[in-house]
Length: 140
Length: 390
Image (cartoon, rainbow over all chains, first blue to last red; front, side, top):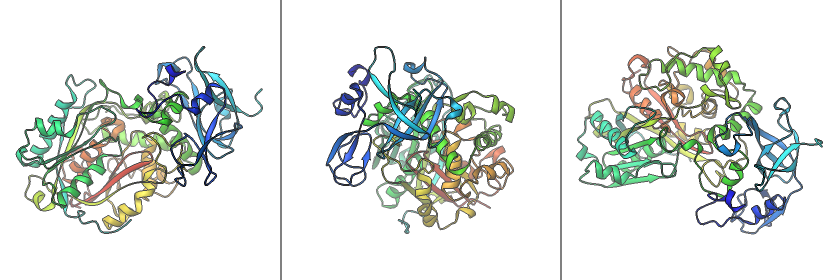
């Protein structure tokens, strides 16, 4: 897991964080501000809406809707060379946070703003860490 | 805030310099930076020894610090050096900063440059800005700018009714301009059929919707309006300037996950300040040089700045107004789409050439005023330039 994450985060940031440890357990969390009640991602040092440092990791149930998306026809990173064309979207979670995610088990012509999505889990490569993904609700 | 800023109307751009634009420069970035800066000083008609300031921007470590250029130019009197870790949002911002420094008396003649081996060296489009959001994006397959900005473009299409035909109109109009620009990396004519046949990179962007990575350098020389009046070319007066972001610009340059509405970028945020400070209305500006790493950012800028109504930018372009011979020229060098991705420093450079009447075969007729933008995402900057002939 640390191998995949190596190079991300600010230079002095220690990864994996509670967020990524949750991902390894197939638990998706967002930041919840205990002061204003807003949810957002990624987790940070204070609330991006009110500035309060009172943040907790809140596990989400994984329901959301598609806000926007792109169909990637070229893999800019070799890690995704075998995946093209693949869909990435911005998913607005029920709690309010927006999550960038692979959108899977979907055909390109189905994609539409507001499409109901649910959380699922996949491996980027066989043997790699779990990554979140979203798929249309009711797809098995 | 909209208020009178002292440096506006009192400072100017006096010259512009370029290196060749290539796919493989064969030299280091410092060579490109120094060559572009020397060219800008010479173009202005100044002696290098009169330059006392240098400002530049770089993304991660893709360029050299201002001090290296000051050293290599053997500047005898260094009063102002500025390096910022920014991308395409920087050029207009840095020109404004240099103008402020000059008007405040900190410096007299300041070079603003961008140089990089953007094709043969470090390719910014796929480099990783550090930050907590980066891993979330990259491991989701969002590893490069075309993909990120495609998501802005898609939301813009959802909100405004824009279609891929509007994106096509940008690429087609700008390719017409590029045919008159010897510097443009992509000059061959583009037909609608060729546009539609081009493969997608990241939907809705096809290859012609994307900028071309390039090795090169571009610099402008900023000075006081009084000094510029004595120099070689007509002064290009800096009459309006603005930089800004709506709340939550994100945890790194590409992190738009906290942005409320991806159908608006910085342009709509800074528009009132920009026009208010310049004292002209968007309907009055003669032409525009709009940052265009991807075709959609031209639509965002035209609508965000109030030049076109919301949802109306595609119609404006299809009317022919923005093309060669039209009455509102836009991206007269072919834009970054065709000339190459000098991160918008060359967008400022083209504005200067046009304002000074040095546009050659692509010279606009009315050069009384120009709006220039820098950036495509959460934060960005813009200038209004005046002083050219009508």
